[in-house]
Length: 159
Image 1: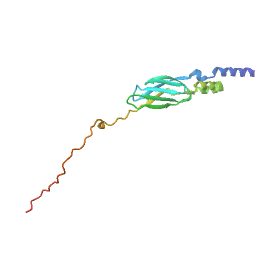
Image 2: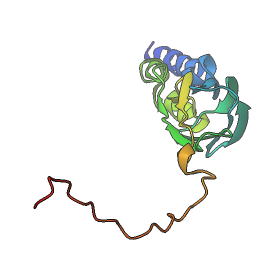
Image 3: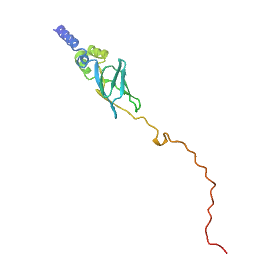
C-alpha cells in the first residue's frame, strides 16, 4: 500500500511539474506606451534577446530572472532608458505544493518563475531649446554718443 502511495505521488509530481511553465508559458506580451507622445521607437533587451516596437505597441518577450532594459527615441524628445523589473510569478507556488522541487526547477529553467508588468509607460521629456530671443539675434554695438552735456542751472539773473 505504501509503495502505491509513493508511486501515485511521484506520478502526480511529474504530471504537474513546471506548473507555471504549463499555465503561463516562458514568454509574455508587454504593452509599451510613451507619454506625452506616441510614435517613439523603442528597443527592449534582456538576456534572452532584443525586441523592437513603435509606441503604442505590444511585444512578446522571453521571460527570465533578469530585468529588461527599455530604450525609446523620438525626434524632439530626449532618448529615455528605463528598467522593466522581472518579478516573481505566483503560479510557481503551485509547484511547491504539488510538483515539488522538480516543477520548481522546470519553471526556473524556462523563465516561467518570472513575470514582467503587462503594461509599461515611458515618460518622454522634450529636448530643451535655446530661448527664442537669443536665437538669430544680431549682436550690435552701442552707438558712440557725444560727451554728456552738463545741464545749466536755470535761475533768476543776478544783478
